[in-house]
Amino acid sequence: MNYEAFFTGHLDRLRDEGRYRVFAELERIVGAFPRARFHREGGPAKDVTVWCSNDYLAMGQHPVVLDAMQSAIGAQGSGAGGTRNISGTNTFHTALEQELAALHRKDAALIFTSGYVANETTLQTLGALLPGCELYSDAFNHASMIAGIRHSGAVRKIFRHNDLHHLEELLAAADPSTPKIVAFESVYSMDGDVAPIGDICDLAHRYGALTYLDEVHAVGMYGDRGAGVAERDDVLDKVDIVQGTLAKAFGVVGGYIASSAATVDFIRSCGSGFIFTTSLPPAIAAAAAASIRYVSSHPELRVRHQERAATLKRRLAAAGLPVMPSATHIVPVSVGDATLCKQASDLLMDRHDIYVQPINYPTVPRGTERLRLTPTPLHTDEHMAYLVSALQDVWQTLGLGRRAAAE
Image (cartoon, rainbow, N blue to C red):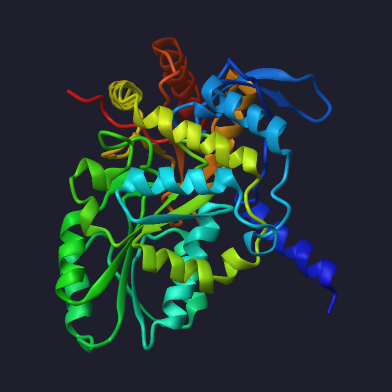
């Protein structure tokens, strides 16, 4: 086989479909967020405004987080020295897991190198080792959840997105004695909608299933202490296993689960994605713990964040731009074509110094391509006014669809 020809041909097809991924080279500037410096090949660097970061609360530059990281590096160095099975559990790992368990009001927590690894490892381990396990997955679940479920080799059943009736049909048809897990997310990051967590948990438990909730796009941003939508909806106790990230609202990197002591110890002891992966650097764990403590104790961050998202949605709608319905901080603007979506992103950068990545298939279904905006507490009214004006210019240039302004 001509491997190079195969690779090249596949990449050419991605380009023809407008789905070839181009990564902008950005230099983050401490104290200047959401401004960053864009480095382009063959041209001078320029300052741009970032509108699509998952650093939702701008904690990636917060002095509390930076001080904790720098202090930990000075005290313990850069790396963890290997897996925890080889190098031991660092004191900062222990402290972070205690913070996470307390945040979600669970017995224990376990940290991973990323949210993807946390999802894949946990679901794969549970599905493979629970005898005859069946995994029930929301149709819109993240790729990491899908990968874990597939790799487990367990029977998997997909229920229509947030559809309780369909989920019950599937559960009711199963053997009552079969181990079952219902896996779903709280905030679905491309549409910005929210799962009925309490109702799904009640239904799952009625049929003897464990509940597995991905709160990646919610931790830090919802609930009195930032424990996520489950805390906001007062259903923390109904969730058997919660999975989250340290890389979005908490501004660092890494993923985790929190659950009962036995469940966490089971994954720690049997999950190959944990056992055979070098653990997070101590400084990362220290920074994450500091961020969690700060975010949990400053609810005004969440208030400001929600206000900024609501304000942007109103401004986009008033300008006649096709902002999609969203119950959360995610602000998607519909384009509906992969090539046009990429062109819109390029025009925003080239003409207006605004960085927004196009969201195309397979991240979203074909025909639903969009720009996904994520306002933060540091995006000002001036930033929003400029963004709306820039989007209007791009929409006019490309002849994109608009809708009547809200009454």
